[in-house]
Each structure stands twice: as structure tokens, then as C-alpha cells.
Image 1: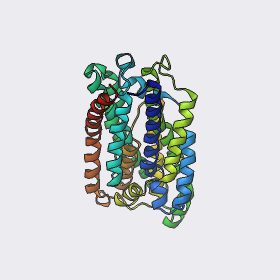
Image 2: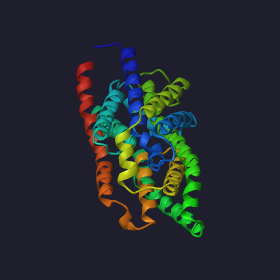
Image 3: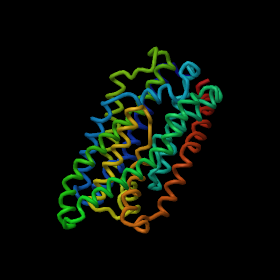
Image 4: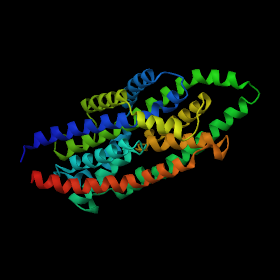
Length: 334
């Protein structure tokens, strides 16, 4: 129906639109705690997060390579021109639903689910890199939130132990300033992991169309994805900020510092090994871990139940939409 170059342009545009929605949807990951503790104004927080997301997005490509070749096998799906577009439609649809209801689900797993569903619709399960999915998706899906919970709990406990004889007002005063550092670290790690996912999906499209020979991220792809995510972050996702910053646990600056620092450590570590973890899962789990050091009843566990439900549904829901989208698009472009 259309020439291949036009379809490739459409895929890149839709991918950047997804990156924009990712920045808006996951903006809360970087700024929810620093806004809810009233350390800075929302406008300042969003602006700073956008710039740091931009910087973080340019720091590596390991996660991009995982999305480009670790989920589906490029040599198997080569020539499947609508596959990447169908994957993006699945991811954007699920992002839109969860954004509307203010549910901090994972944009990362929405994209991965959409890609898996579209690949299965195209070739079958033989298109999937089973070992890569287990090592880079399923294991981190479980490990990252657990690591976040443990890191938040331990860091908060250490802070309590170190500051036990210091007046509470002095502690919160100090951590109001330190939280600027932790929020910056969190925003940078968010860009480092999340923007690379769209870099990987565009690079996979370039391989499928024969524009490049292997999964190596071109410079223009890095710059475009980093800019789209930064712009999305600047728009913000205030419904999810409210959920993350107020509904889980009543945060003070010291709690915000512990949650942001622990989440940024886990996300940065995952980025170094190329694991596309959910920044949403991780920061949520860190907040639960921090809150649990006070007392278990201080945490609103009913919110945890709702979040876990969304986490479990994301991969199959986005995968189903990706599967259906593939056949619809295949019919249009056949």
C-alpha cells in the first residue's frame, strides 16, 4: 500500500511518540518523592528531571542492544515490516489506559509485551529469543522490585541508626538538601534505562528494513530518543505523581532521599548489564521498603495490591494488543 521508506518513517515517528509518552508516564519515577516532600516546586522538578533524563539517555547502549536483539531474533523477523509498528501500538495502548487511570505500570514491559505479541503473530514462538527473555526480562521483573524493596529498607534503616541521636528537625533539614542530589541521580538513571528501550526498538526496525547490518545504535537515534523522552518528562504525569508520592506512604525528605537513592542504584546496576528493568516497579518497591522501616501498618498495602495487579497484567495485555495490531496492520499493508 505504501512504499517501505514511508512505513519506516512512520515507525520512527510512532516510536518517538512512545518515548514521549514514556517520559510523561514515568516522570513520576524521578520527581514524585521530591515534589511530595515539598523540597522543590513541581515546575522546577519537572524541568530538572527533563534535562537529567536527556543526559542519562546518552550514557550507554546496553539496554538498547537487549531490545534490539535480546527479545526477538532479528534474522528471523527480517523483512517483517509492520512488526515493530504493531509492537509500538500495543505498548502505547496499554500506556494510555494506565495513564488515564493513574496506575504506575511499566512502560518498559508494555513495550516488551507488544514486541513479543507482534513477533509471535508474525512468525510464531520461534521468533523469540527465549534465553534472552528469561535472563533480561523475566528474572529482572522479579528481582528488580525485590532488590528495590531490600535496598530501600536497608538504606532507611542505616539512616535511622546514624541519625538516631540527632533532632528530627535537623535531620529533615539536611535531607531536604540531600534529596536534590538523590532526585538528580534517579532522573539520570531513568534516562539511562528507559530511553534506551526506544533506541533499541528503532534500531531493530532499521535492521528489519535492511538500513543497517547489525544492532548498533546510530547517533541520530540516540539524540532523537533522548530528546523525545526529555520533552515527555517536561509535560509530566501528575496523576501518577499523586499515586507515587502520596498514596503509598506519607513521605518526608529523609524517606524521599532513601527511596530515590536505592532506586537509582538498582536501575543503574541493571543498565550496566543491559537489563531493561521497570523503573516504575523499582521506585515503587523502594518506597514500600522505606515505609516498612517505620512500621508495616504505615504502608498502604491495598495500593501495593493494585500495583502488583497492573504489573502482572502488563506483559500479556500489551502482548495481546501487539498480536492483534500485527494482523490489522498486516492486512492494511499486504
